[in-house]
Image (cartoon, rainbow, N blue to C red):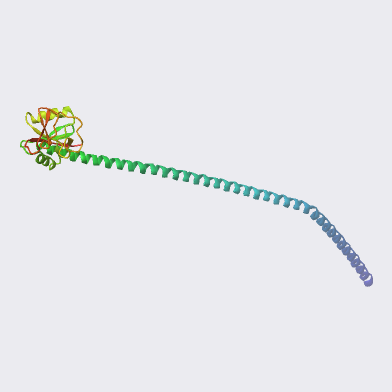
Length: 255
């Protein structure tokens, strides 16, 4: 009985071992199939991944090129702006220099005119003061000149010395109107005038060394070394000795 049970147990274990080995084989076969399918799926998906990777790299390259193009455009625009700004600065600076030069010239011209006007004003003021002084001392104004008629009598040379000591000289009569003015100043007296032929007999000259061209002689002067100086009397002239004493008229130009 015990042997029968033992043999039954042995057979049962053998069957169980066979089942276990069969299950192991089936499991291994399933694993092999899974590995094969996994490798096939892997081989199938690899080209797709490569294509996706290639597309991604292309997109990145395009993006990089776009960024580079934008940078180049920005650089060109910036360079253009810098050039335009430099040209504008140069133009403005050049125009500023021109305007500054014009302003400087205008300033110098204005300063020169101002100095000229100031100088003229000073001369006018000086002339005015001088004129007032002479008028106060008994001189008379006529046609831009001052005239002084003496109340005493001297020789021709002493009369002239009196005039020159006062910045004047014996009168020079240029026209009929001035001769009438002398007549009105002197009345009916004899008046020394600035005319003589002391340097050369017969060649009458005024005290400014100009030669007489026409005059108001009462008669044509004769060649006479004793009569070398001229006097005015009642609108006409006479030749007299320079040593005679008469009144005189001084003349001073204020131009």
